[in-house]
Length: 301
Image 1 (cartoon, rainbow, N blue to C red):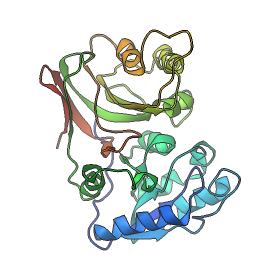
Image 2: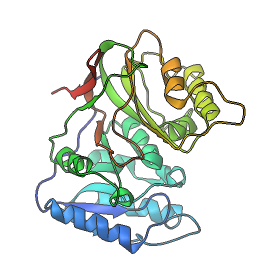
Image 3: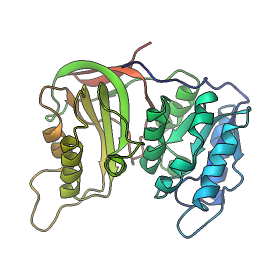
């Protein structure tokens, strides 16, 4: 499977559109995003409906999609960055003008609920950035902050993880694709769900019960989504829960159990809902190596 289309790298002075495709945002988050962009030589531009609120959402579905579509049509804008996640991308993702984005590729940036847009970008042959969002800035570490700037400049770095008892040794090459497990699970059967044939699948999640994790992994497996998979890596599984009667496995053990036994599996990678959330360039060819020294993936030219 070949790498997907990578939008042009950013240079000083390029504009980044700030959007809220899911939950509503506030002025503090918007200002944080602008300050980070300025500190790296970019210009953060507020989308027309940014700051709107419709119940939990950052405006109506059409307003949130319009912000993306307007940004696609503006030549100075080279990237489109979600201020925060939450819930709501599912009801605007199909209103995005994906044909226009393919004709004028720009980086889509976000994670968690933003997995809806990353998946749809993948289906449309476009790479994207699975990266932290401004809502995380107060807790985020310096390495993660810098990782987004490097990725936007075309200098993305691979990631390493320490050895772990759950790791399964091996080496494979594939297309880096994935995101939030709960969101991916909700996309099964839709035209936003990415084909995982030939992929290195990466997963993270937040605030789920262990049995929910197991159910979602069974659904991916039984739907045939793991056919042709080349490997699996796990990031943070944050604020997980058990029942009064224990499930018997934690979240990482469940992921390892469901990863096909012939494939390399590794956990401990720094991405997800924690203070370290490194940027991943989805749709890139990577080589995953898991051995006694730990695990790493590197981007291929």
